[in-house]
Length: 379
Ligand code: P1T
Image 1 (spheres, protein in one colour):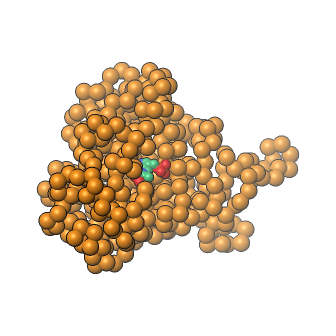
Image 2 (cartoon, protein in one colour):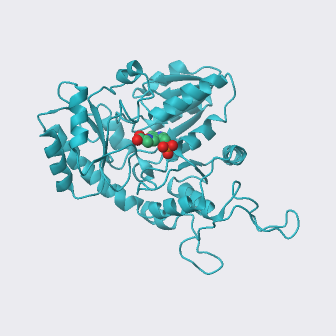
């Protein structure tokens, strides 16, 4: 099955009871048993739920994996991956990443004795220097949030294999429409399904997909034992969202390109971060590993002025100022004070998250309206 068919049919079967084309929302916490253990494969909804399972199969299909797991948020999915580790273990992580991921790693798991090395991975060889006998996991986010750096998954996967450590890739910004990390050698793909997977800014959810059975069993154990699962209503909504993922992503990419080009030509804009530009330092990797360049763009205004950036996001009308990304509607954000505020200023500025940085999640509205909105806000 090709990707555009998988988003609609991958891993799915019609409802066995009545032939419903969409899986019913099994709004139940538990399942009747005729005798202890005499059930139809479902005992309790933390462990299994048919609507959630339908979604998990869809996740596995579109990421070209064998096993999918759905969680109550993206961070809950990341949390499950880190629970594979033990005190004394070490993780090599991308240094430019979602502020909440950084917070989970440094404010929760460092206290449990796990050591994190945050490094630039644009040069894949850097990773080798930070791997030792305690290293168990490489954590990659690509494109990175919010600087849109691109990391060469294939090269990092080769390093991970060489040292026998796991490679997890946060594929939230790209989605499997643009890149499929398992095909490039990653062991675990993670999503904030809150974003493009759901696609309509109405659900908070996380996902993991893996190929390996033993790894899947460990993660299912953690999912059930820790219990950070999502409910059946939310599972249904994300399953519905996935069915239009390919169509939405195509338009996100088209609009993203138009907006990036407009911003690059604007006299009040200092720098635009978008991997589709030939001048982007990782453009060649982006071209090789991604189908297109996505709808996420960051830019700075001239003079690196905090107030100036705030004025722009306040004036935008179609681009709603809000946390999050990846929905059909365009959003703007000010990473330094919003999504990345939990990263100390000195740390975030090292990766380029300066006070004048604005992040756009370009939606699927009319391209002309989006550009007019930017024109009035920057003008
Ligand atoms: O919000 P949640 O579903 O828990 O997902 C966390 C997460 C993980 N990884 C990436 C790359 C993310 O962007 C996020 C969430 N990000 C935002 C809310 C944001 O506005 O950037």
